[in-house]
Amino acid sequence: MTAESKRTDSSLVIECFEPATRRKLGEVAVTRPEEVKQVVLKARRAQQQFRSTSFAERRELLGAILDHVLEHADELCDFIVRDAGKTRENAMLGEIWPVCEKLRHTMQSGEEALLPETVSSGMFPHKRAEIRYIPLGVIGIIAPWNYPLQNLLGPAIPALFAGNAVVIKASEAVAWSTERFQQIFDAALDKVGLPRALVQIINGYGATGAALVSSGVDKVIFTGSMANGRKVIEESAKSLTPVILELGGKDAFIVCDDANLEQAAHAAMAGVFIAAGQNCLAAERFIVFDSVYDAFVGRVKVLTEALRQGDPRGESRVDIGAMATPAQLRVVADLVDDAVRRGARVLVGGQRALVEQGDYFAPTILVDVPKDARILSEETFGPVMVILRVKDEEEAIALANGTEYGLSATVMTTDAKRAERFAERIDSGGTSVNDFGFTYMAMDLPFGGVRGSGFGRLNGREGIRACCNQKAVLFDRLPVGAPSKLYPIGPFDYDLARETIRSLYGRGAVKKASAVTQLAKTAWATIRGNT
Image 1: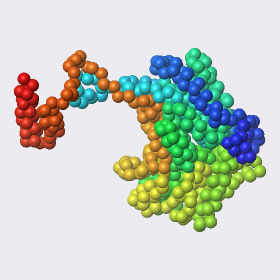
Image 2: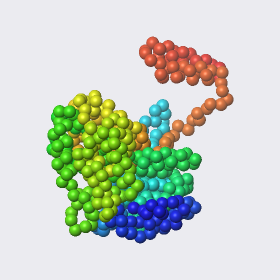
Image 3: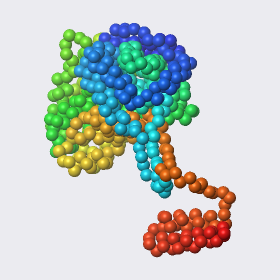
Image 4: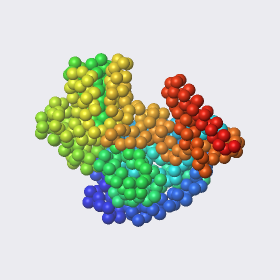
């Protein structure tokens, strides 16, 4: 995390501290806004060489990145733990694993997604129609702090495979680890003989991010809060720079009356306590059918009370680490306090923990949360399980859709038809049945949200194509050679056009026959008029 006294756009350095201990890690230089355009210019020059590389050469680059991540996984996890306060297990499973899977999937499937696609040429049988996927140029990535490694590499992987250069603005809250993460790219680029300027990580505050958006990059991929997403949109509108926004959510986790409760309870624990709840896919509202409510609450209470919290690098093993920033710790505490003041009951936790040691919030369960509590509508992004009781499917769906967000949802049920109904009716970018979060790891699936959770997609075929100019091209299939004459306009041209359109698109045999007859008469009149 960064020292709050240094959180100003005029600062020349970012002071970095361990969230788990508040020990100082070091200082990182700020890339000043006026320097950002030069960084982007260097990237653009590097991309001119890179855009003509083959898919095989790009696979070689991603393979070199994968090799480095695997060979240095323990070291990289240590950087993540120290900079973000999460456990080593979460660093390995939540960051190293998704990065490796995305690299594997892109190397295996990326070429197929980007090959020229032949489509129908419609009314022009003498032509061949193709969609070409052309690199955009330079992709700007603005990354949040909750996944220091994955948030940098995840968007960069498809951007690189599509033939682009990348400039990444890392969050100031996890700036300390960026020098080490830059080495991943540098080593891979050196290994395959490409310029290091192809991938550059810059650090700074809001002004640096705004400068990247307005720097002339060809697209911006932003992951973060809804409020900051609006700022990105406002800045990008000045230059009409396209953006992909992944803005988090207020995801519903629905436990039906036919659910396997042990399965549901453990999926719920993952949904709310991974990365201390600092996860865009976090399950923030647990919607439980009345008939299984007490049993579900009892089971997750036992599991939550057994969780161990503390310094992930300490002598004792812990299940949950620290909050990554003191600002987020205050957000979580404020939302929980507001809910309690309005009548919510705390079953477990409910307050800050290990106050003298670091930035921790205790694993928490809230029940009987009133409808006017802010925690039901505002993103918590912390280790808080809010459990709500409903009577049936209709009430569950209404509650699930009752926020301005729409990133993802989880449904626990053993009824396949019921699962289909929920998947169809919940307003979200994805729905996972009987598991939490696996839609993100199935890399052929697109990842993103609707409504306040943003727009655009990061994974799957859609995600890699989003890093391209999807260019329409019409080639000659047959060397016809005859000109398509429009000028000068003849006396019968309007009638020919009208009857041709009627003959092509008229509905029903009688209308088509009438149009064809009239077209023939008009064509004969045209021939006579030209002779």
